[in-house]
Image (tube, rainbow, N blue to C red; front, side, top):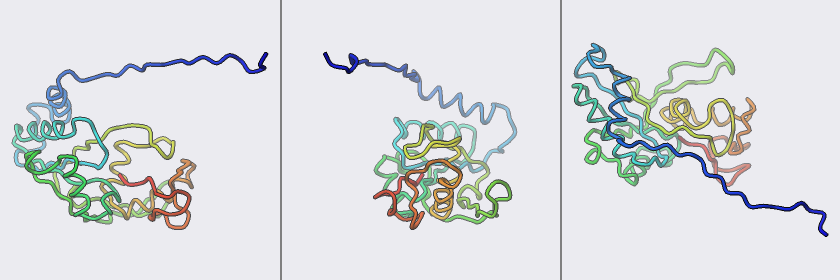
Length: 215
């Protein structure tokens, strides 16, 4: 008789919540941000909407619904690319990625910016001090920003913040410059970032064939 214990195949099914009415869910989300009757932001205000390179189910209907809700409040929405180094970290490359996802001014009903321009806001004063903090010019020039992203476990490291809103704001809309610092320090602060390149944090060489960084 074998010394190995009996092995059984087990299949587990996880509950998957679904939205029955996507447009209604978006309207409720926008209402929480801008309650009806609220004076701010004033009519005519520009509202930036982040858009990344990760695949999100129904991303085009989600974005068009957000745009429609903002326009109904007499606001001026626009989209801007937030994807770190994806698309080669270049405006044209990021524009190509968005187009491949079906995200264009015509399909969304609002302008789409892929300028890649960032501004240095300052340097960190807490935790790891002295790190530069960049932000997309589109975000700084708007009257408000709505961050649209999925929240999930990161594929390359585990930590307090992985793949979600914080990453979109820290890396996505800060571009390749901020990306280099965030990925380089990920291993230093014990995030076990397996995609960190020892020779060059911003290059696709080192411990892995490709850096899994980006947005």
